[in-house]
Length: 64
Image 1 (cartoon, rainbow, N blue to C red):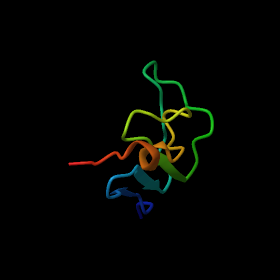
Image 2 (tube, one colour; image 1 turned 135 degrees about the vertical axis):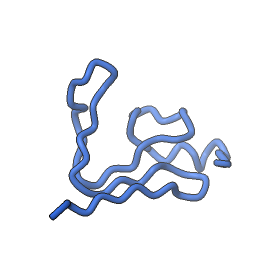
Image 3 (cartoon, helix red, strand yellow; image 1 turned 120 degrees about the vertical axis):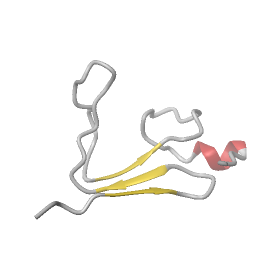
C-alpha cells in the first residue's frame, strides 16, 4: 500500500506538501526542517527558503 502524498498549489501562495516526501537540496542531501507537512515558497521572496514564511502576502504575489 502506498503512502498518501498530496501536493497542492495554493492560490497566490506556497506549494502545500503532505505525506512522506523526501526534500533534497541540489546535491541530493536532505533539507533540514523538512517534515511530512511543509509549505514550500513559490514567490521567491521567503527569507526561509525553500520554506514559505508568508512574504507572498506582503509583496502581493499572484500565481498563474
